[in-house]
Image (cartoon, rainbow, N blue to C red; front, side, top):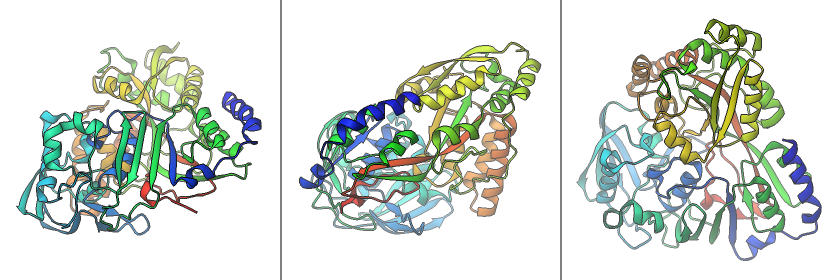
Length: 504
């Protein structure tokens, strides 16, 4: 962290003389910096947070969760009711048009949902709709969504990233066409894009306002700027109006300057270490031994890292979920920071002198390096492999990673099924491959009784702790840095809704 602090200190003197802040407001253009490249703008083909932000601007979901009340409100749907435990009927909004003029109706909903659940289409964000068996058209403005089983969290999922494509356009151009020219019904339409690097969004004047408001700002210009120091320099120069995820030390420096607003807000994102308990990366990986996994748990001073590096409203967690999610019980067994206990467990597992391994990460290098230092203290010599998110995800899907430092924001879905069931149900990036754990999670996912769901999830989360399949680390808070003319209130779901940002 010293290098980061030094870099900011070097930037400050020159930039304090510059005029910033008013450039965006003057031409009604909000300039935003993304840290991470979006591999594909279609939200069904990426799982990055940045991709979800673009999705909520360009497309609409069927429903919207009010961030203040938690109430579900209509967007592309106007009303809904359960016909039975596995059939959700939705009435659709009339008079809505896509950016290309195509009229919205039931055909678009049925096409989109059935496309996403068809395995041959190879979508990456499978958790969004994996609970859906199929959708059917009842009439031009009525659809029925048939679930694979009782799924009480259906509305929560539908409100978060289950966007609707125009069926005629999508059938004509496919994912490749959408990657360069996306079309939605959202408050912003894409004027131009350089995939993964630059997106220019224009306010869609034909937007039908619902619970999701119209856009206030005329243009949103988004560029991928991976280096945080470069982001800070561009804030000073006025070429960027808003960034988030700013490291604590840099945010503290920026807070001393009057031309910026700094807001620290809690998020749904948690960090964790996931270990290859199933032995997919190598039959002989030490990660197959529960004592090794427990030793790694004991070796990490989670509170120390939160206090020294994360700060803000971040806190240590013991559950494989975010405390704000339904069913995320925090009253679980835990592993204290105890290096000597870690050494004892390693010796019992046959590694009295430790071992060498590759530890993978895709973000927060200083945090990864801090954990590597702590592992070294108990004899585990970890070499850092720092990759792009998409590259690391592909390696994990192929079972090529023994241990990695990950974060997950659950696609902003406030339900344990969006994280524990995403990573522990015998597919995708599940490093445990434990059928018994899957069965427990199924009880929580498919029960229509809230008490039964909570009990099942607590059992599953306790099981994960006992087996040390993950080392849950901490919740993330996010530091937002913005010009004084920007009016924006962050929400815990970590969604920066461009249509809810305005000028002061």
